[in-house]
Length: 60
Image 1 (cartoon, one colour):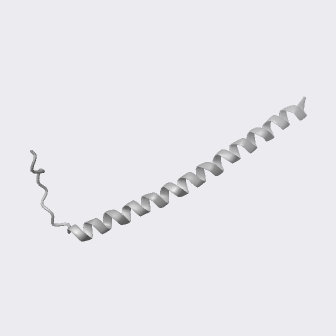
Image 2: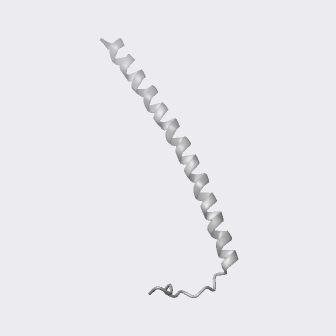
Image 3: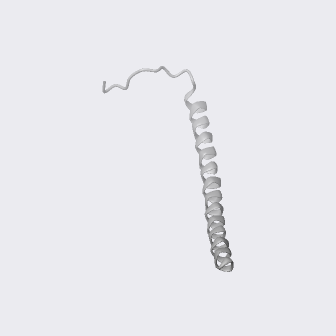
């Protein structure tokens, strides 16, 4: 009886480990995408300048 419970627990731990590994990969990918987007925003700010007026678009 204990051997069966241990077997199920080992299987559960292995499945949870796989989930954690997948989540770590996803998080790493998302971090890289965020860093890329931050760089693009910084580049746009440099190109357009921060002194842009805060006004409504012409269609208002």
